[in-house]
Every structure is written in structure tokens, then in C-alpha cells.
Amino acid sequence: MICFQGVMRLLVSVIFFGASYAFACEAPKDAPYPPLAVEGGVIVFSSIAVLEDEGKPNPEMGLGVSFLDCSTGITKFISRLPYVADPGEVRDVFTENVVSGENELFVIHSAPIRAFTGVSYGSDYFSVMVFHKAEGGFTLDKKLTDYFGSGADVLSPDDNDDKPIYTYPFKTRDAVVSQLASKNYRGWASDNLPDLNVNKKTSIYSLKSMATDTKMYLVKGDKVKQEAVSAGWVSILYTTAKKKEIRGWVLCENVDGC
Figure 1 (cartoon, one colour):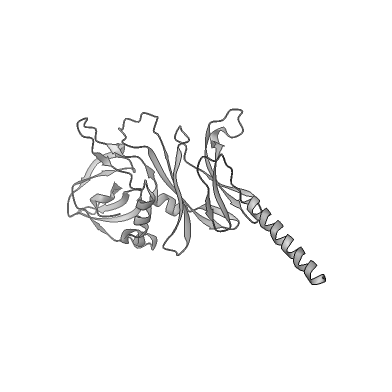
Figure 2 (tube, rainbow, N blue to C red; figure 1 turned 60 degrees about the vertical axis):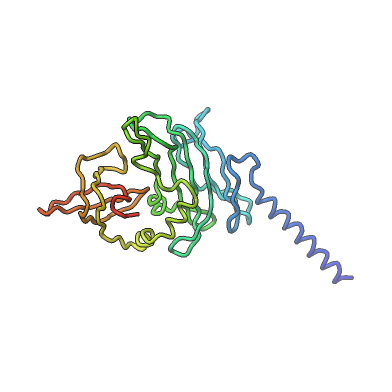
């Protein structure tokens, strides 16, 4: 009888703690995007005041991402998502293995562009944010986040040409996963950035923006040293025949750099 009572107490304990665990991991039902189960908990999204309005009576609201820890029931804030005069929407959230051998958390976000910048856009403004598992939660992986970057398709200033002159390359999970498997990404991740050959006449920009054309350009056959990669752009160093150094940004596709 004593043994039977002991078994019953153990069974009740298992049921109780199992129920507590499930309750602790119950994500909000009114979340702006479905939760994602990850090791140790759940990734959840919620409305949150934009940083500039935090503490104000009627703040502008953006989107935030948090980690619900199943072992404690505590929700730990991870990060705000980009706010471009609009909270936008989460397009996808997933985990994927990176070169380091670890699974990292990827969040693809987009928002409509409401401001006039003198540039004609052909898509929403996209961004990819990457987070790695840390003690008790997640923290931003700045290097990978900078690599995938953010941007929107830019249309030709010629009204008769609807073809984009720049396309933000990482709007979907498939595009991100494909990039993670690429030779160029593996070289970048291992800090092995080879020199590149220019494959066509290409403009040099001072920033990762089609609006920052320096009016300088490279021609097919020129060789450049790549110094950084982000959002379909390569930061390059070009040394002229007279040993003058020119730095700027060029499109990856024009130097086979991404």
C-alpha cells in the first residue's frame, strides 16, 4: 500500500508539473504573428512602443520579438523590429544552421515605404534580423544581421522601364537559406574575402544606396578588394594604376561577389 501511495504521489506530481510547463509556454492568442517553438521555449511577437515614444501616453506602436522561457514562464524581450513610419509585418521566422554549426533565429520583416526620398521603390522595405541563443534567451547577431541587411527594390528613373536597378535579395526564407549554403557566404563567414573581378561597367556608390552615385565607375576586367558585404552590396577598395585608392559600394552582381 505504501508503495502504491508513493507511485500515486509521483504520478500527481508529474501531471501537475507537466500542466504548469504547458501553461507557462502558452503564447498570447492575439499575437501579430504565430509563435515559433524553439529549444527551451517559444519565440513570440507583440506590439510595443517605438523607442522614441517609450513612456509617452499615446505612443506610436511597432513590433517586438521576445522569448518565452518554458522553464520559468518568464517572457524575455529580445529586440524591436524596424519601424519605418509603420509597424510593418513579420514575413517569416525560422531557425537555420550557420557556418559555426549553431542554429540561429532569423526574422524577416517588411514595412511599406511612406516617405518620399526621391527614389522610386518597387517593393516594401525588407530587413533580416538574426539572433543567437544566449544565457536564458537570445541576443542580436550583429555581424549576420549586417550581412543580410535591409532594403527595398529600386526602380529605374526612366518611367518607361519597370525593371529594378536594385533588388533586395533576401525577402524569403528560401533566399536566406540558399545564401547560407553559398560559396561566397562561407568565404565571408570564415573571413576569407577573395579579390573580385568586375564583370561589367558598374557605378561606385558612397553608401549602400542607389541615391549615392559618386559618378565614378569601374569597367569589365578591373580587380577590386572586397572589404564588407551587405544586402546585395560589396564594399570595395580599388587601386588605380597610379596607386590611388578608391573606396565605395558596388552591386554584388556586377563583381560576382554574393
